[in-house]
Length: 103
Image (cartoon, rainbow, N blue to C red):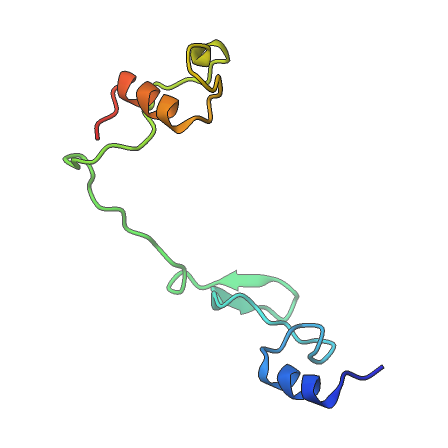
């Protein structure tokens, strides 16, 4: 079964997928190689190619996380709201402020 000629032209312009390419086509995920394959089937990591992420010093950082660290999920703590649901936005913000969150 063949697609219509108009659809064939549209398919040619789309990105190639692994099902459309040759049997050994591997698309990859754009990360690049971190090393090389050995002739014995192993993989040797080249540590000059490994990505390292440097985290800045956050000791004097002014912003706080949106969720307070002391907030615990309790079933009975939402009984006094109108919706009686922990997913209610107003109740969530009230609880967050109560636990030490800053806006």
